[in-house]
Length: 378
Image 1: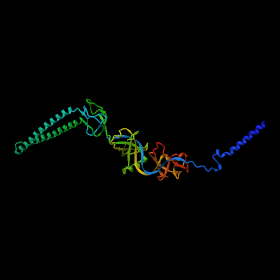
Image 2: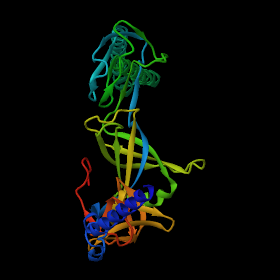
Image 3: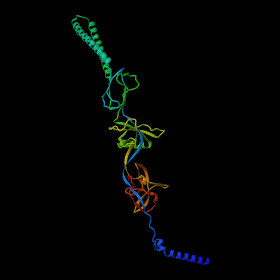
Image 4: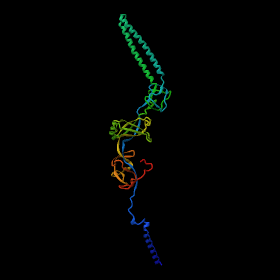
């Protein structure tokens, strides 16, 4: 019985094997002999154009905004504040009245000096009359030469006295002008450190207020010494430009190089540069830090997105697409600028370069362009 079961099991296994062999074309996808060679996989990649266009040669740095003119207003007299004519932090124009000081004491001194001057002028007129009279009498022999000489001396003394009186009066008038403090230039004024009734004097250390010129302003920053030669050439041709941008904001101001320091810092190898910015809208505020870009010149160059440039032991390269296939193209990158690489050699401009999907590529890999990813600016 057992032998019969074994024979039956072996027969069933053989029948199953024959059935599997007969139906192999269905579960193996057809006759193996009829299958052709498998097609190579096509990789979808994102492309961009290599372009030949003007590219600025620039240097980025951190700068500080400083006013061209800044004045600390102080009193030149010992007196009291009568009136404050501005609001704290307001914009003031050249010649605006800012403070009025008590001038009553100087007014009294001016009146006294005017009285002394009038008295001496009257005495001079009398001395000149005596001189003329003695001159006539000497001609007639009615008086001596001594009297004539004394009359002339007296007139000359009074002329000198009147000059001294006039000088004293002019000095007092100058002192009187100090009682009205005006803005020496247009700008923005700080908060007033004194109020009406405060006593002020020239020896005070704290100023009455400070005015900073707001337009134009300086932006001071440092650049590497290797840029100095190119910068001097650009300044000679008038091609240099400075762009100052407030960190975290898109607002910026353009200007030009106003001054290059006359020495390089030997400890850092940096040299200080000062740019002058129009700042008509008061975008730049004295004392703030700004991102500065010194544009030395603009040159024609071949550019490609920096994301297209790959690196290997043999140097930089990019994948270009020609005839539906990827090709390795060695390139020499001289510098980068705002997300693009300036290619010194390897590209002529107009090539399609791969900017995304390079990991699956090699020389000759079939590729197909695809649409840029959402949010991409390429």
